[in-house]
Picture 1: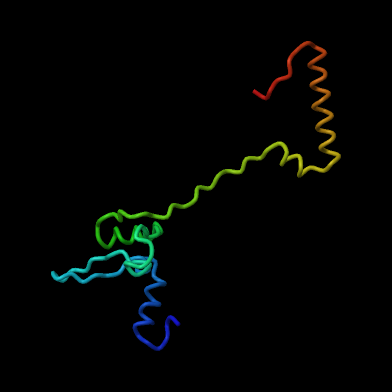
Picture 2: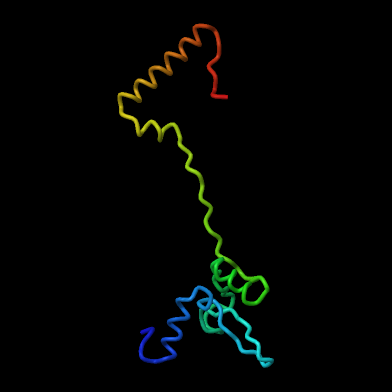
Length: 126
């Protein structure tokens, strides 16, 4: 149970809520400065030797740059790009009532027939 009576567990629970300390751990250097190392998601030497640490969020990478002055060189989670909705003819027609769809189709076919009688070609929407 995280956050129990043990002070070490409470500290770890607080660190796992922090967007930076969840992915990095402070390392005290002999010269008295504090560096930050990537927190490992599992113990080293266990399991697949080709295991690669999962990427971190952009927020944690930004905080790392603020604290160290250097950019984080590991993998960063990319925000999925939002694709604009493209409305197709079938989708727009499906939202209309049956009667309106039939009317639009009839009008379109009458326009096409009128163009054919005149000897012209129907435009392809260009």
